[in-house]
Amino acid sequence: MLSLTMSRRALFRAALAAFGTYGLTRGAPALAGVTEIKVPDNVPEETFDFDTQGIASWTTVDGQWAVEGMEGAPSGRNVLMQRATKNEFNVIVAPGGPYGDVDVSMKFKPVAGREDASAGIVFRFTDGKYYVVRANALEDNFRLYSYDRGRRQLATATVKAPALGQWHTVRLVAVGDHMQAWLDGKLYLDHRDQRFKSGRVGLWTKADSVTAFDDLVIRGSKEKASWSYAAFKQMGDRAMVMGDLVLLDQEVPAVMSGLFSGGLDVTAVHNHLNEMSPHVMYMHYEGHGDAVQLAKALRQALSASATPLGGPPATAATGGPALDPKQIEQALGRQGKDIGGGVFQITVPRAEAITEMGQPLLPAMGVVTVLNFQPTTDGKAAITGDFVLVDREVNAVAKALRQHGIDVTAIHNHGLMDTPRLFYMHFWANDDPAKLAQGLKAALEQTNSVKAK
Image (cartoon, rainbow, N blue to C red; front, side, top):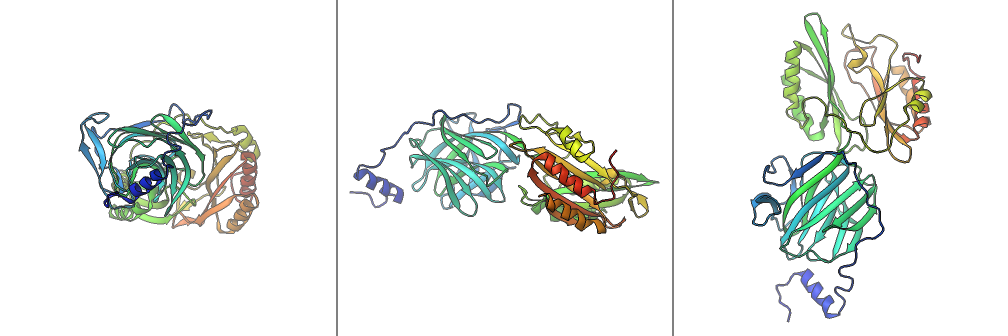
């Protein structure tokens, strides 16, 4: 007679066994003849073994996560435990990222669970949306899901359920829209999906799973950062600073208060692109006074954000698709430069003088049109940047961009007292680079920009 205390899952398994159907496809072989995808060898690697560092810098979405000692841990003495038993899903996100292409592995030990005894790798996590690849000691399957206000199964494989109380390994590789996943060293899942492009990496359990994790290793190419910048100019015995700060939504209020406390003015807050991952806002600012004090005020304001201070890290070779700069230069009739990370940039100053409170603003102070090209796949390139315009040029440029299949993602001011009054038009497209360059050239022809040589 079945015990009345058995879980619904155990009852279901018992019923299947009674009919002789449970376990018929148990232990199916791993995928054969599938080419394994890889991230470049030179991408950075981060390892979390929970002995040398805790989880103070991690983000707990849900669950009861804590570093605990455990005999027999794969490395060192500590593991990361998840002990919550009443949530639908338990998620914790590691620091670092966001990552586009990524290779992640972790070790897990299912300790207990009546409804579920699972463990998973979360990847491309942004604003609560993510993919997860998971194994479950109570099920003979290995699955990939996307999560966006509800799960949707993407791929599944029949496997021998990982044993309770033993250590196992899950590995995930995502390159572009191509994803592969391994359980205990065997490749079982091979799938393509385009929902989420990039994001952070984390760990996952479900329902009443009590699970130990160790040796999380992340090898990933971080998405090209959006850089905050500050441009200083000496004006007599005082300096002027202006620029913009790239912030997560939740960082905006505290950073704005920090700027005000340091005597700086905020001149605009807005988006530059749509559907960014993670979503960021751009806070433009301006200040006048002693250059050192202005710099200190900026640093103090930025301390309320996760902005890494210091110079940008060296950019490693991407190992991915490349552009033909000559083709772009010929189409635009202008010269550009490689700014790292596979990005090719062309800048176009305006022909007239730009001033702020009577002081001339140089192109380096953000009053120059910027056209960025970055290679994607299938010979295409993504373009983004902004046109610096006066009022009568705005609609003509927008029309030219749209006629060439280029999206206009924002139109706004950056400063408050510029002369002539300037408007900034941000754009985005992903297509043949020569075709896009022709569209940008058509838009430039509607502006009072410095003529091409």
